Length: 114
Image: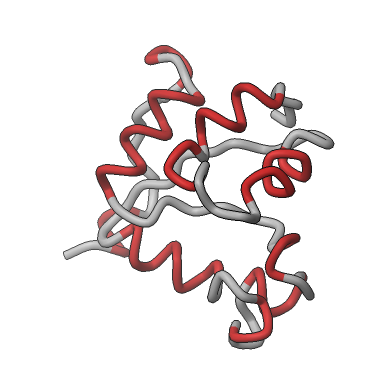
């Protein structure tokens, strides 16, 4: 479900970037409209997910990636993805309550995983 977050929430999410010169613009952009937070899971999900997203700089992203197809400028790269399992856990805890993260088994799991 799309939701809009306050600047203070976005500042907390990106606190590791707070000393970077682009931080104020990032916070302004990410709090300017609704976002769709989600949790992905699966084998090597961080690595696979980041490959699907494309490079942080859209100009360096391959066609067929989200950023490669839908982005033009690095400051408007349309999607965020955790850079590690540890970051993902921190971000999931920030964005979701325990009840909002529902575990489930996909129907095709036996066909996808060994």
